[in-house]
Length: 254
Image (cartoon, rainbow, N blue to C red; front, side, top):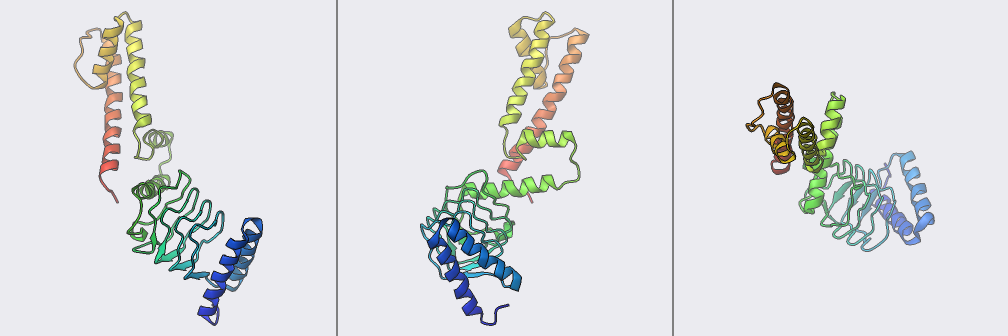
């Protein structure tokens, strides 16, 4: 570690401020050079008492840092990395965090105020529940839960095509759009089969929907009845998955 922590903190903060002021490739190179020196000496980068409000920090690597009492309000943090970084008493209200990486960062309590809607699907919010900030937008809170759930599923031993198909259909337990479309498609496919067998179109559609929802139908033909039973089984699987998604959406699970 640096012999004088205060001087090291000031040096880290000054270097980052210089990099942000320089901007572009020059600023990026300046900061990366400093990070390489810190990594060689084993010193953790300390940023404190800085004001980067409405500044451009795009693409900067600020991973594994300690950042305290720093203002990022309205800053552009797109594509920046804060992976494994510890925040204390920082504010990033209305900051742009499109593609920003917060994986395994520590934002707990008042570590980082993250009330912003300027994020996208590439923003990495894979953060432990006990490291989440007290003040965070609802959308980001959902994104963090989705990231944790996705990681959990991806690290499970079973990766058969059936499991992968279910994960894709359910959006890792957060979306029923694909599943709903799949249900409609099943009803239409079986309705087409009933119609092809000679059943009037409307009756075929109603029969298919009834079988899918496990309701009684008027088919007495053994062949059509067997096909309907197969559709009923698919319908049971459909509603089981739908129930799982609804539980995921409305109930918090560990």
